[in-house]
Image (cartoon, rainbow, N blue to C red; front, side, top):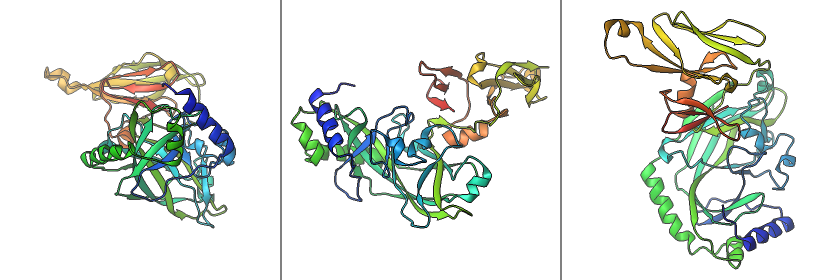
Length: 366
């Protein structure tokens, strides 16, 4: 990303003087919003929560900071506020650009996921209001900690009711793609004449080259389930359908081998235990497609024995095995991502992130 040096240092100076963010109000006008850039604190998506006061040290804003929402680990959580005072913080998240607006799925592990006991002892959201904003990043309007977005609220809100259950809940948002894209197109025209406080100040350092368009969601907790002991409102994880997260076991052991036995049984050897039967299907012939077992995920294909014996056209189907949890996860994957497991591959990029690539899109595996 090209960053205009005058704009960069101007923003840095402003934030050093005043670390208080102004957050978007309910309005039909263009507003300004700062989002934390992706870094070690939030490796998943740009975001901001209203309890963060120092953007250079967001992890110090809370003993259970909002960055815990994006670490891919259910046993950490964000404490959004108190159920007794009924003043929870709000959360803004930039929607990953690879997700079409009409395909958006919001996944939430509501409550403290460290254990079922702590889940019930703490409060957790019951009802959440979701607002959507057309968002525009003017090129170069960044500091080393945050990015400025010009945003306009989409005039349709959604409300989701969460079950009081320990685990991930998935909510397809069923948005109108054409209406959203038309709204964003019209909103961009307004940005070009916008004279907001921060945006106008730093235009003096040089005009932005262009705007990058996106969508930003705002989540507000409206009602909660009470905790049996504590009033902290906890959420353990939030992510969209470009990511798939399963629990990380307390005791996880290294995978040393995986193979197919008798054409129908997936056997996995772990460092502490050999010959674990992870999946069996006597009616089909299994094929192991993955070869890098250090990734902790295995892709399988299978065909019906009846189809092979009849000499008909063979229809291959596919399975995704989560080796750390020792289970097939096709059903959960479909629920969280909206996609079926099809022919593809499991890969790791240069940053160590693991993806399932179906040759159309890539889904991060956590």
